[in-house]
Amino acid sequence: MTLSLTDAVYGPHNPFSRDPSAEESWYTFLPGISKLLLGIIPSVTRRKSLQARARVVEAFERYYSNGGHLGASTMVQDQYLHQSTWNLPSQELAKMDIATCVAILSSGGISSYWMLYHTYSNPEILGKCIEELSQLLEDKESADGQRYRFLDLSQIATRCRIFFAMLQETFRFHSTIISAKSVTCDTFLDNQYLLRKGGMVLIPGPVIHKNTEVWGPDAHEFNHKRFLNKRKIGTSVFRPFGSSETMCPGRHFWTNCILSFAAMMILQYDIIPEDGQWRMPSKRDADIWNTMPKPLENQVTVKRRVQDEKELPFKFVWGESDELLHTETHVQLGSDEKLQALSLSESDELLHTETHVELGNDEKARASSLHEISSGSLATGCSSQQATDVEFRG
Image: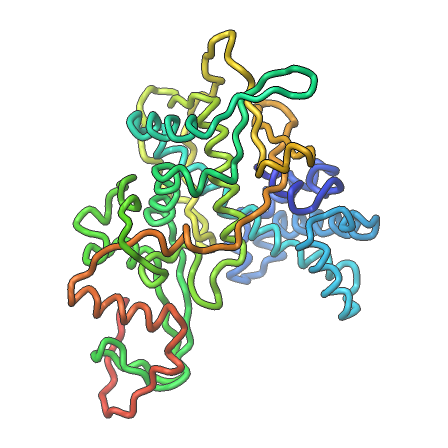
């Protein structure tokens, strides 16, 4: 997915597709981030990672100096204009894109893996997802008389309830996000805990996402039907992208990318474990900085699904207008065809407000306390009430 996503963001002069060594260098740099964060003599302990990062920066320097950003997405162009107003040298501009690429390439591919794993490892779920997606397919004919099966990927999130619920449950079950909130004044939490001004509150996502009082007794299990319920739940207890002002700005981009990629795979390919048995991969080597833990290798065979000779080829686009904008999308393993740019929805409703759970009185109190923290309202939650310090343990 690296080339597909970076093509969508950086345009036809994408450094990763123009310079294959840039992609190779990126994946040499990525595993070293955890050690670089520790800052223990990085020039010695993570020399290869630093050298690889420098090569990626050089590729982006060439990209900007040659005007590659002029054909890029609006995000890249606006970012360049903003940074240029501060007269930053070209090398510093290029360094900024290391952070951008970490955001683009870090967790989305891993999320796609986990969603496909849970879909393919359960024949019942796979069948239901194929059935839902197939209902969106339309038989069409091109101007030259070629017939094909058409799928508007922008319809998936709103019309494929089981498929979308699978993604939400994947986020809930696997996300390891940790949010941080600063305490701006002495605050009581749940009328039990005193949080002192100047302190820091860390909110570990897995603790909230696996809370049986919120999600029920099966909170530690993957349940693809969990988010089919229409009762409301908000970012206090479902927070794969964080919440409040620090919520991930790329959440719409990634949601649509994952759904689109998974849909194209599920409709066209069979994935079979090499030993014939699906087993949950270990997360032992997951990166500490990544909000989605990567799995250890799980050897599988991917092959195009056997189809009738009369079966029409697929054509995937984002929105009906994409047919006229030459953004035809393909996934073909072993080829150079890439997933093109996706126009994104600006609504959070599907991510956070369409799914609901009913809470009892005790659970409502807990959810209210969680909401105080996650909504950033600690600044207005000050209390003049006298209290003794309480040791706060997550």
